[in-house]
Image (cartoon, rainbow, N blue to C red; front, side):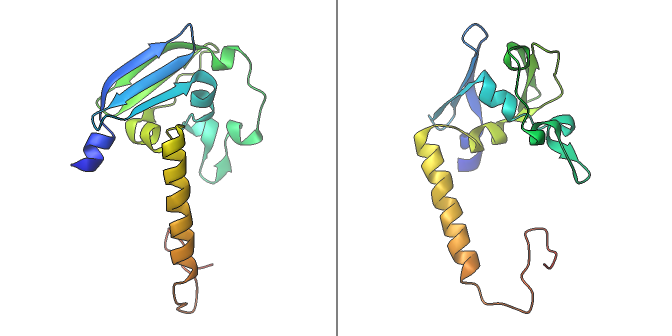
Length: 140
């Protein structure tokens, strides 16, 4: 139940003039994204790639004002937001889980760093069984 409260927004505000999107979560946390950060987070296949191929954002492009102008924001079911950008791009569904997991506030950034360090420490101290396993289950 705690994870559901963490990823369930109770309020979503898009301020197109300021270029911000704010979410208030059921657990009381508040997340705010500026449009540029939100555009860099686009999870669509074109931006992130697919089938092992890198996406457009992986080329580290210089984003234009049109590409970071938030024109509209649509709710997708009960699980995501779909921004419409000034250049017409609209295929990225930003899930609530993604938006909460990538929250840019200092507290969430510290928590991500702490989890990363704990994972790196526990992975480094695990006994070897002949081949290190990756998260996808393959051997190195």
